[in-house]
Length: 279
Image (cartoon, rainbow, N blue to C red):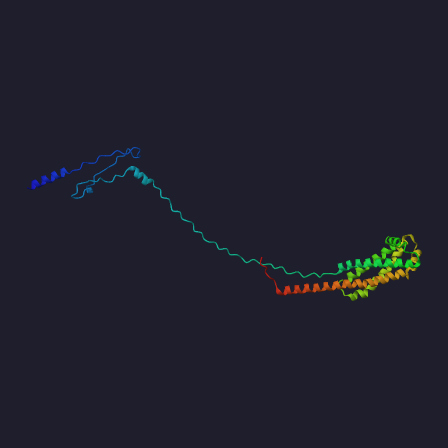
């Protein structure tokens, strides 16, 4: 019976033997067409007692191996670490410009302009006095007054006193500047004397003096020392200086007040100290 069991087992094994798998040809165009592919039987492919299906081992084709081999893994991109830079600013010096002291405003230019108006008035009154004195002598009448006036406007004896009066008035105004009216009342006497001298000089120019001898020139001056028109020139120079000088003094007073106010504002600015102006 033992021999019978051995023979039966041998027959069963032979009946269920699996033929070896045939070698499959590689696919056309494969890079590994010349390489054989081994397909071996795996004994564990059959489960015990289940003979309905048989599975061969998984065949890995060369093409799949090539794809796996050529797969490229991109390297990970690492972002650079940026370290923030903290700027340390050094405090810069701030320069503050000191205010400039106010410049005092003068009154000399105003004295010159007012002196021009005073000279015009002086010339009109001086010419009127000259024509009036000559009318008393009978040299000027109503018929020739216009002609005599035009002749006087083109003569030396008229213009020299007018110019001298203006220069004296302006010079006194430049000296007094912003002074009070009392200065004009007192020193106006010198403008009157200058006008008197201008009258004498005008008579010399009218002669004319460059054609006279020394004795003739002296005689002309001596004859005009107490001439009525010379006295008129002195009085006009004195009085016009007083009244027009009062106008100059009034303006000088206003200018002085403006200068004081500017100085007070300057001192307040210095006491307040420097200030930063936001731009």
